[in-house]
Image (cartoon, rainbow, N blue to C red; front, top):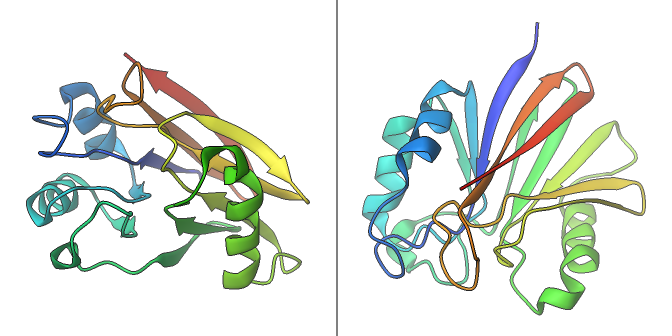
Length: 168
């Protein structure tokens, strides 16, 4: 049996965008679990995502006010995979090395399959750094500087991942 995840980040509602697009909301509602890598923008946006999701693992982004009330890092076990979620705040050109370092500071990357999830750059990314797979869903609303709204869906089957980028 597999588990379906919706992975989103950088919604920036209401600061940069008016609402989360319907197609993103549909993916969140359909998923077994949702991961949000920060920058909700407001507690109401966090509440909306929590209401849509079957389960939610989320972290605070650099734009989130303290009232969003989320940690800087979180982990979730899905089947045989440990997902480490951070926002990835910092310069865009060093995103992958910074996120890989944060993942290694959060869990023992040698103890099974570990995947890092981070946003911040608003650019969908899938890469491997020092043996750790890193995923960035981009911006679920297409908030600037993104040119389009993007998110990921991930099917986890044991320790295997099938990652799909969705964009509009």
